[in-house]
Image (cartoon, rainbow, N blue to C red; front, side):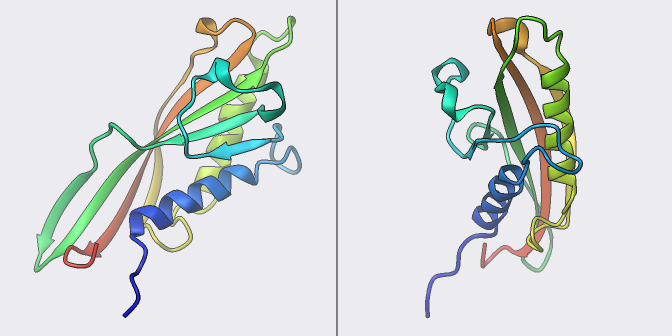
Length: 152
């Protein structure tokens, strides 16, 4: 019998794919160049990598509730960091648009391709004040799914 990928991994892969689809058309303002699951220091990103989105799960507590007979409910916090270059005249419009784009992409399929029961936004903050000519935002979403605890 072949190994089956974890639900957690499938959900995270879905998130990266969903965020990579932010292409500056339709409902989106921003054209994402890089979407990945690697935490980098925003100032280390090269110009040709931005606008970029990083998906972070390390360091956050994933809640697991046992309901009955091995039925578990997982709630995983997922951090998303958005990074883009700001023009001298940008008063925050670009980062506000990026936060909206991330929200749209994350909520478009709250089931994360059928692997989750719900996705919701917990918080967002514009961190641009700390990075000079970079627009940087941090957002946190929660993803919930149900599973047989013996198989997860």
